[in-house]
Figure 1 (cartoon, one colour):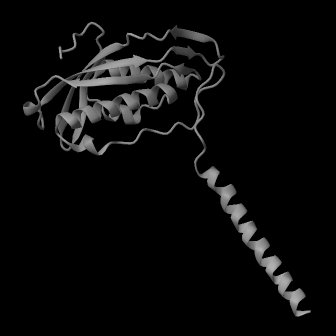
Figure 2 (cartoon, helix red, strand yellow):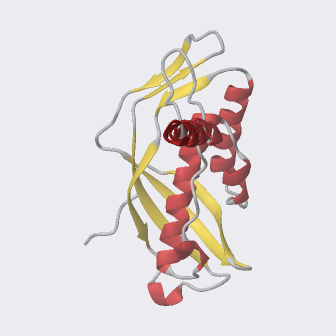
Figure 3 (cartoon, rainbow, N blue to C red):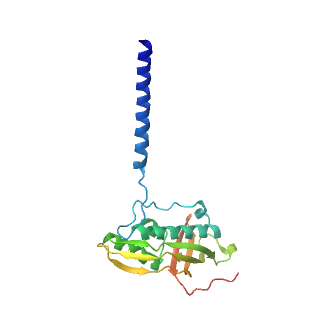
Length: 199
């Protein structure tokens, strides 16, 4: 009798532990839904905003490069979601970049979306001499970028614009300033004819 009771208690305990394990496992995925890339029939879902980099807190050439890399991550995030808040917070008078961000916001607000086209940074070249980079100094940079093939859709899923992948890529020019513990881009624009410095 005692053996049977002990076996029953053990079975109940095991079932309770198993049930606990199952509830923990099933709860975990609901905490953060997995991101889904855009397609020709729907926009991207559950895209996470890019995280900042510790180097961005430095008034140095490395800090400027880390900041600009983050800005392009935010440009990609804006293009995939229409979200502008974090990107616009990094800009201060950069009219072309601001206008582009607001165009994507309007597109998504109208039910449209973008497939592809994310700007992939190849190289960030700070052209201001390293010894001159300091707080409140305008720092210039050139950024070589390879955008993916791009297609935009309206609310009905009709193609609005397409751009093929260009292996030659393009060049952006930027001016950034480190003030009050943070970088801001005062100028950021595509300048495909800009000349890169020779090695």
